[in-house]
Each structure stands twice: as structure tokens, then as C-alpha cells.
Figure 1 (cartoon, rainbow, N blue to C red):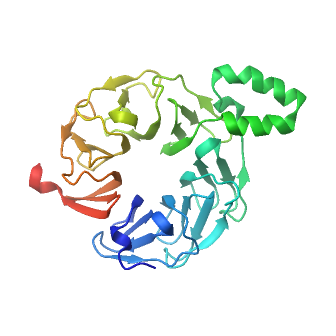
Figure 2 (tube, rainbow, N blue to C red):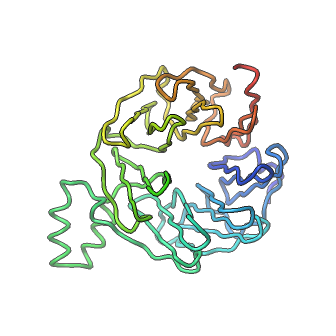
Figure 3 (spheres, one colour):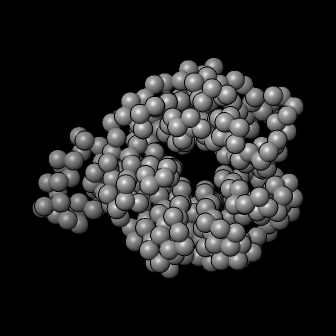
Length: 311
């Protein structure tokens, strides 16, 4: 427990309801708030870096992080239990999503993909050959027939980092390194790897208010699709910092958050963006919009911005 936990590196934030917010970050820090401005630290059985959090309601939530760590709470974050911890693997999980209290997915670096159908009491690792790059598939199919054990090992090393999950109705998207983007219509039981349109890492995907798709990634790269990801057009930005997250508010404004204090906004559904970056230059990892305020998690903790000032 640290008195300045809310000033430490925080990596993800979720608005669970109008009066419940949760943020996670370094050293296993989990912070809870009833109003988005006053925060209390939860007691957590780990010091591993946490990278993502997902609650399905005000009581049940999961957080994931380094060492393939998965934490679970059933009392609104007051207490947390370990569901998985694999320090010997030395691989981070980077995102988690549950569609209900039983069915969840956690993904991460080096093709890490875990599924549960019992609320996380057991997690099963899955490997999907269809998520490998086209040039690797023939080699992998050959191995699958001749040496299943080496096949699993090779597939685990060939698959890209899976950086973020995005749920859009009945479709589950996943983005990652080297232009990786894939979608699933059966909650991750099978996948379609989509055609690459960029060879750098993608860190987030978002459905815009006018039903476009925005993908963001390394060095200020932003791509927009109006046909559910079949084709993509690059959005030109003045910024070149890596973009970590994209989110929107109820008014239809789209925001991009990234390194070096980068914060951009669009009022034309992601076609063009204007600056509202933070002068301290500290990385912004994610954010949520609440009425006339924006709640950001950054490398120096929680920031609350008044949106009325500069709009």
C-alpha cells in the first residue's frame, strides 16, 4: 500500500457505473473511486505491473498484468484473489474482457491467449494457427503433422503480441504488433486474420459514433475504416508520438491519447484531429469522459481535465 499510489504510473481505467471507477497500474496498484476525483487503494496480493482491468458490473471484475497475472474480485474491488500467476513464463498479459460472469478472454505478448468458461476458476491457453502470418502457415501446418509438441512451441514464438481486445456487438476484434488485426464472430473460438494495412504495432481499436472504425498505434499512426475493416485510410496527424488509446464521449467527440502528453480530439468522427495535449509531456495511457470532465490515467497518475475550458 502506498500513500501516493494515485500519482504513480497507471495503465488503464474503467467507468463501471456513474458512481464507480477503477484504475490499475504499476506494482499491482488498484485504485477505486465513487466520483472520479477521490481515490482509495485496494489491497492486492501482488506487486506485478497491472496492464488492464474489466468489470462486468459493480461487484465482479478482473485485472491482468505481467507474469501472466490474472486477478479477480467479487466485492467491488475491496479484495482481490489470484486466478493465475506464471512468473516463470515472464510474459505479460495486456488486456482482458468478459462477456458475462463466466466467459472471459485474456490476451498478451508472444501470442498469449487464455479463455475461461467458469469465471476464471480455470484458464485454458489457446493457440490459433489462423492468427499466424501467411508466410508462416505452411511451415506451421507441416510441423503440426510431424511434431505436435514443437508445433505448439513454434506457434507460441511466431504469433505476434496481442495488445488490445475490442468488442463490437457480436464481433470481437484483436489488434497487435506488425499491423496485426483479427476478428471473431464466436467470442474467440475461431479467428479471421484481416489483411495487413500497416507494418507497425497497433495499440487500440474503437468504433466511432458514426460507425467508422479507428485503429491507432506507433509514431502517431491512425487509420480509419468505413467498411468494418475491409479497407483503411490513414488519418494525417501533426503529432508523431505513439498513440495508446482511442475513446469517445456521448456528444460524439473522439479522443486519442498517447505518449509525450499527446491528447487529440475530433468532432468530425475521426476524419481530422485538433490538439489539446498536456504541457507536462507525460504519457497518457487511457481515459474516460464524464459529462464535462475527462479522467486520464498517465505515467504520473490520475489527471482530471475540465473539458469546458478549451472547447
